[in-house]
Picture (spheres, rainbow, N blue to C red):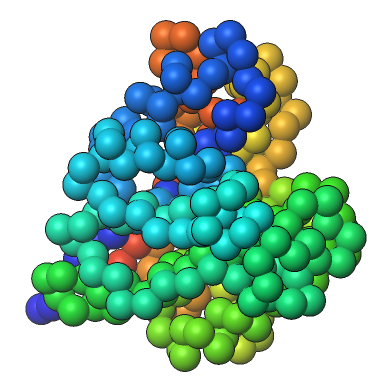
Length: 274
């Protein structure tokens, strides 16, 4: 019988370091963020809101990982990134790029539709160094205000996934800024030529942790009404073994205003047969 390799993917809005103060400053959170990847043995992580200095800090603390991505303001180093960190001993990058969620996806810095900010998708085609397994990983962060932008971003993302992945295995991570009852979520999981599914809904094991992912540095005990807005979606070539929302924190507080989402997967449904 084939030896099916398990992969662990993470979606994590790490909170930018523009203006946080006190216990929420990046210097007090960075060890916790890097520790999530190391402790949970993450194969590849899609991060959101990362600035270049935060990425450089994480790279220093994660020597076993490489990263790829571009700043949303200029396509180079300016503005927030949606970087993908990947375990170098496990994965090799075959292709990668960034596109903008706008009417002109190849133009850096473009704001799409009614979006407040320019928004991007960073993607990569990876190959397993050991097995030769190939898959596509897309990481994004939808606008937090523009409802048209959110909707059109979902349509554009799925269109790009179809074109880029050519029917191969797909994992999509991101902060989508909408709860499951929102129309945008329903577009993402709509049964069409891409056929994405929410990893939480199809996990073989019962999902771990709370339903909510955004807590505003308060935690769900203090404010239990926060939303699930961070997701890992997969297509039909992916079997989800486990899914969980990780409530990691350190002595000085939470490591982000979002909880990370973890999915453990394999690339063949038949491998889960008992």
